[in-house]
Amino acid sequence: MDVDSDREFSHVMSELPSVTTSTVELHANLPTSVNLVRVRFWPQAICHHQAYTYVGSQDAIRGGVVCLIDEEGGKDKAFIQLDVNDVVCSIVVVNEEIYLLVCKNGGKTEIYVYDFLGVHGRQWKVGVCGNSAYPRMVASQNQILVVDPNEKRISRYTTTGEIIDQIPCGFVSDINGGLAGVGDSTVILSMQDSNAVIRFNLDTGLAMWTSNSIDKPQGVVRYRDSYLMVINQSPGIRIWILDVNTGR
Image (cartoon, rainbow, N blue to C red; front, side):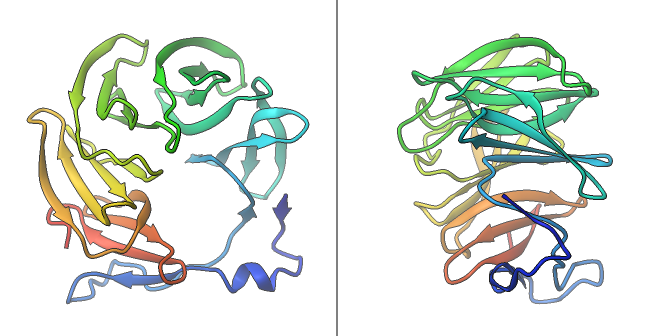
């Protein structure tokens, strides 16, 4: 279900997040408010690239599907059609190709690759879905990174599906959390069950910093070069801003 900007949605507006900065000094280039652009209910994955937004969801009739939305709100509700029981866990765009991390019926997890016309190019298996948390995927340094909560590890792949390495990561959450790339050999993990946001170095296998200032952190994205935006819902929906280098 979509909610268009010219329709009544006071119930949605009441749930808009506030923005909370975690630093003592408010920097001039940090946002202090958010404006609602578009609302879509029950997406499992979302990715914005250039003029388009790709939304992965599960339709009661069509099953697993990726919807394409342009800047004017126009939609292709079945831009990429998957199998009826497929769940799109993550979407990233790398080198002008769309990568989908898909949980299949029976627990298998695969990465599907499409071009910008929605034509399937290749795919490969990456693991097994956990019972309580879906795997997550992000792109960094021309590599595909997959967090596997079932195996407690992060796997690095080339864009053609060749395994580079698998890094043990014992604190990966069994509850759905967030994952963000930083543009180097580190990633950001957010975990609801431990109330932690962690910058993890894939080369050393060690945490660079841990922030416990956010209650039940969920999604996380990199903002510009120096900041992270972390969302939580306890209490209410809020967006927190952290320094990417310190976690403060």
